[in-house]
Each structure stands twice: as C-alpha cells, then as structure tokens.
Length: 299
Image (tube, rainbow, N blue to C red; front, top):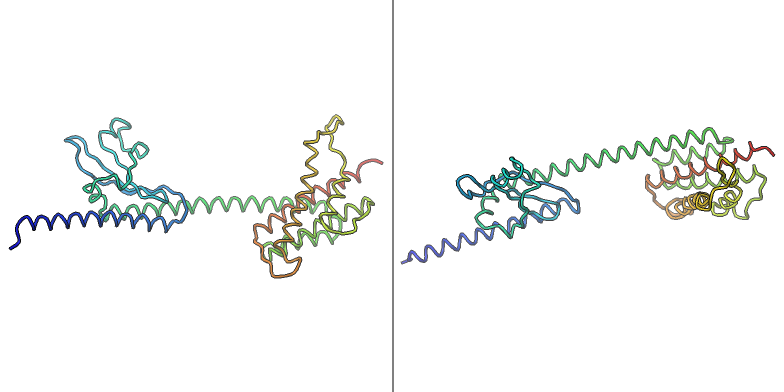
C-alpha cells in the first residue's frame, strides 16, 4: 500500500521535473531566437505578466526581453513605478537573468501569451530594422545616382571628341549589365583622358600606356596651387595631387583584381563598378579642368 509520504514525494518530484522542463524550455527558446536573428542586435520586449503581490498595494510584474543574444526578464513593481514616473517605464525596470528568478515566477512568465508576445516583438523589431535599412539603402542609392549624374554632366561639358565620350558611356551603361566590364572601361577611360592631356600639352608619352605611368606624368604637369594673392599652398594642400594619382591608380588595381581586362571569368559587383566609375569620372573632370586651365592661360 502506497503511503501518503510516497504520494507526496512523487508529486514533489513531478513539480521539480516540471520546473526543470520550464527552464530547459526557455533555454531552447533563447537558442531558437538567437539562431533566427543571427548576429543582429535588437531590442524586443514581450507583454507584462503579473508575478505576484508584494503587499496589499504593491504587485510585481515582469516581461521577457531579448537583445539578439540573450533572453532575460525585465521586472518592476507598482510602487517602484509610482516613485519614479507614476507609470511603468522600461528604462527603470530591473534586468534579470532567467537563472536568477524563482521557479514560481518563471512558471507565471512561461505562459503561452507571454512567450507568443516575445516572438511577436522580435518579429516587429526585425521588420523595423529592415525598414530602416531599406530606407538608408534607398537614400544612399539616390545619392550615388545623383553623384553619378553630376559627374556625367560635368564630363559632358569637358569631353573633347566622340571617342572619349563613347568610352565613358560604355563604362556607365555596363555598371548594371556587366560590372566587371564596366571597371575595365572605367580604367581605360582614365588612361585615354590622361593620354589626351599629354598629347594636347605636347608632352612625351610613357613607354607603357598604362594608368600607373600616365597619371604620374599628368599630375607632374599640373600647375602649382595658389592662393588668390598668388602665394602657393603649403605641402599639406598640394598632397591633393598625390591623392589624385593614388585614386587613379586604385581604379587600375581594382581592374586588375576583379575585372575582365586580363582574361578569365572574373566577377565584380555593381557597388564596386559604380565606385570605379564615379572615381574615374571625378578624376577625369579634374584632369580636363586642369587642361582647360592650361589652354586658357596666356602664353
């Protein structure tokens, strides 16, 4: 015959097992949420759950909180709220680890409604992050397109001859259809602009008609930068010429690594192709404006 002691012992074991299952279940939920969001940082809180009365006029409540890595619990009480803001305020709630909460409070927190609410809150937070990222990407894209158009308009006023203009247009058009080919055309465009500069200035061409040689000769021919009163800028400002040279050579390096110019089946992305095209256009505008300045300067 089973004694009452055995019955109570069996019931107590079932309670302990159930509480262990709750903690294990919450650990599984934390892992599931963490795996779902990857490495994204976010802020998501579930719905409030009554955790029990502290005294006649005060009761404690809590809710799940997930930051992208850890599932924790925010807790407060009605008296604490009244002392601080008069209404519940998440910034003043105590943040606790699940392991620090009593079994009794976890049993109340682990109700289906509270668990559903943290899943819904994470989904809502991800949707908000996606919206912000999409808006930012759109703004950057609009800025990039606007910048590209501005460079294009400047070049249209400065380009001399159909050949240079055709090279520039080939590079621009290929950004979306063949980014690797666009990078090749952007590099070839700078080389052609440099050669045009040197030939117009009646300067000797290098033995190798490559950007690393051409841009150096072009930059060396730039007139010194001067202030309105005629004095020359200091060395720190004239390093701008070195920057022009480095950027032009950088487009050539990019061409070597990711474009189709040297054979093979190399792949490039639109972002790099647009970067190379914008840089090539900006450098070309600067070089052609310097050339125009030479031509307009009285001899």
